[in-house]
Image (cartoon, rainbow, N blue to C red; front, side, top):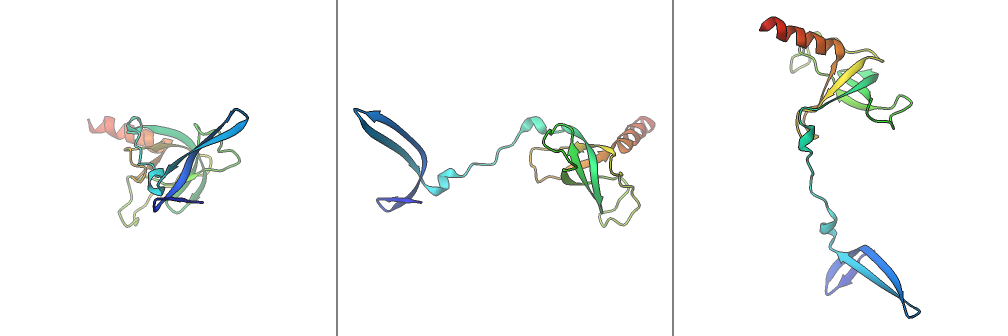
Length: 137
């Protein structure tokens, strides 16, 4: 519930209490509603990182991945991600092969913005990519 002081609507963000001579003294710290919002944080250390996981479900060009580094994803839970394939057009009208449930995949994080495209590649796709790089040299 907001507190109005001198026409300003404020919210309690911190409270402390202590006893002084048998009397309880409370101190409240107040902020404007906008001061509670936290700016967007970016983790520069995540650029180019990749995490391994297992496909738990496939739907269209999306795969549900249970990440190996996340202990809380038990019982077939996971997060939906777009599956990256070299062989698809922007319209998705080319042939491509989706990984099957149980396949091990790699989740690639290209930058700090979580809204950027996050690619999931199968182990077979990773090996094919490395082989193509060796052949093209």
